[in-house]
Length: 170
Ligand SMILES: Nc1ncnc2c1ncn2[C@@H]1O[C@H](COP(=O)(O)OP(=O)(O)O)[C@@H](O)[C@H]1O
Ligand SMILES: [Mg+2]
Image (cartoon, rainbow, N blue to C red; front, side, top):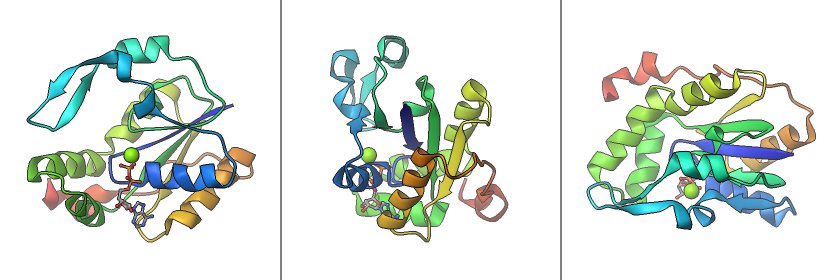
């Protein structure tokens, strides 16, 4: 079983994955699988440009968790989408030293449910699980992902609506 742990940058994917790994869950970081799909650098956005389509089509499924902000595009068995309230996400990304533009881009993406919409388009809702991490620590988030791995919780989406209260951040 391959479980994708996805979400807007800053929602806590890597932190939660590290905690799961510490508990013995097999974890793969998508960032460790993209080296040969690197097309170049995008200095303006301070990121690498990756050939997503080729990465997706050539991806060899892994057991356990695959963690990264594009992993919902992979043929995973379950998809866990971490969410974070936009004002809190903004704070997390500022602390990370992201540029204003990059912070804004990610905050907008979170408000507009971009990852959820992409995941829904590809997989439908039956294998999607959302976790609102805003008021949860990393340990509790990892507990919830473990329950999803065990299959003791039902798929659930549409648990947040940032647009109503945070639309003015767009
Ligand atoms: N549940 C949480 N509560 C508070 N801070 C968190 C939480 N999850 C992540 N963070 C913090 O937010 C920042 C981004 O987390 P990270 O795991 O790197 O996110 P991602 O991998 O999704 O980009 C880090 O500084 C991390 O410590
Ligand atoms: Mg990360």
